[in-house]
Every structure is written in structure tokens, then in C-alpha cells.
Amino acid sequence: MKVVLLGAGAVGLTIAAKLSRVADVHAVARRRHADAVQQRGFRMTGIWGEGTYKFSCSEDIPPGWQDADYCIITSKSTETEAICRQFADTISGREVVSLQNGIGNEEIIARFTDRVIGAMIITGFEWQGDAAVHVSVEAAPMKLGRFPSGTDPVVERLAALMREAGIRAEATANVRTDIWSKTLYNCALNPLGALMNVPYGALTNPHAWTIVAAIVREAYKVAGAEGIALPWKTADAYLDYLREDQLPATAAHHSSMLQDINRKKKTEIDFMNGAVAALADKHGIDAPCNTCIAELIRFREELP
Image (cartoon, rainbow, N blue to C red):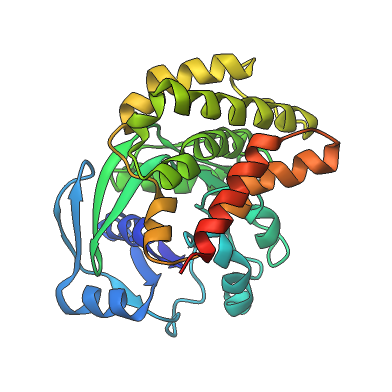
């Protein structure tokens, strides 16, 4: 089995490391990470195990890798379009997986291939240096499904490969629902944790929770208008699950958006709360909290 990971940052390099024990893997990453992997290997610590992994890694796809069984895009959502354009010849007609945050990545990929697999992962990956990542938390198994719905042997085979590599993974016929479910989690915690510079567990504070609840209730209305059948019947039912199950499992995690802001990088807000606000406007739904928090993150992005 040959797997190429495109836009491999903390998530992609860690997935590549795990898969490298059970498949032929090549990761396309930034030069400093690629050089580090080639020179001393990728270093992983945390709940997925500790060790050093060697696998093929460079800034491009070398000869012999254009026929990969799966191309997995793990980049920030802001880079999806550029990656698809750069590697259009490779991904055209191939099985392409979006293992990314937010809403809209699969739709972008579908313009370049008709074989799109959606994926959802709620796991904390934190940089510890070049080609070095700490896996801090995991709230649920990875979900993989044909986008926008359904499953098939190709999806099932990828889920099995992930499990063989030691990653909890399940095939699903309703991956769009899973993507929206993770987006709820991201919208509720990621930007607020970034703005307040606190780990997720701190957001149970009553003042913060008021904002979390408002964000979720607006997003639920938008999901309903989009025809998404979420696993929880009401926004309040999801908020109970968030507080009682998801937050305890990820309480120590610091928002990836906070990491982006600290590194002066563009965040994924337009694929999270910004996407919810845009869809709300499309459906004539008021979403002031999602709009406000999206604008606050954009303001932070522009600070010197």
C-alpha cells in the first residue's frame, strides 16, 4: 500500500509516522521538517507512543509516488486550494482524503477529483520542534467516509490500515455529519481558547461557557438549515456532551488557532465560525456570536 500525505504539518507527519510501520509512505512537508526527518527521523511523544520514525519526506512528490493508493491532505484549510492546484496531476482521478479542520475542504477537493473521502479526527498535536510532535489528547476515533455520504471497500480498507498502524479509526456512511460534529467542537473551543490564551478546560468558566453555548446554538440552527442530521437532537444535548465527555478528554489542550496566532500565521477561522456565519447569512439566520468571534480572530491575525 502506498500513501502520500500532502501539506504534512503536525497532523500529517504524525499520521505518516504511524502509517510508515505498515505501508509505504511519502510526506510532502516544509523543508525544515523534511530535512529533519531525513537527518534524524520524526520524533513523537505522547499518548500515541514515543519513538523516532524514518520515512520518505520532501518538499515535493518524487518519481514513483504518483500512483499512490491514497493521497491524504492534512494541511491547514487555508492551503487546500493551493495544494490541489500544485498536485493536480497526482490527485486527478485518485482517492483523496481530507483529514482537516472545518467546513468546505471536501468541496474544494471535489473540483480536482471525483474520488473524495472525508475524515474527522479530534486529537491534539503540538509541535515540539522541527519534525517533533507531542500527541496530547484524543476525544474520539478517526472517522472516514465517502463524501458526502456512503462507504465502500476503498474507505473500509483505509480505516483498517489506520487501525493496523495503531490509530483508532472507523468507517462511516455519514461522514458529513461527523465533519459538522467536529466543527461544532472547533467553533465552540478553538477561537475562544485562542483569544483568551487558555487551555480548553478553562472554558467551563461560567462567563466563557455563556459564549460557548451561544456559538453552538447558532451553529445548530445553521446545520439544520443545511440539512445536517447531527447526533444530538438539540444544541443543549450537545452542550451537555461537550462539557461532560469531550472537554474532560481535551482539557489540557491548547487551541491550534492559538499556536497559529503566536506564530503570526493565518488561522482557519474562515472554515470554522466564519463558515458558520457565512452559511447563516445565506439562510437568513442571525449568528452574531459566530460573526463576532470570527471578526475578533481576524483582528488578532492582523496585529503586528
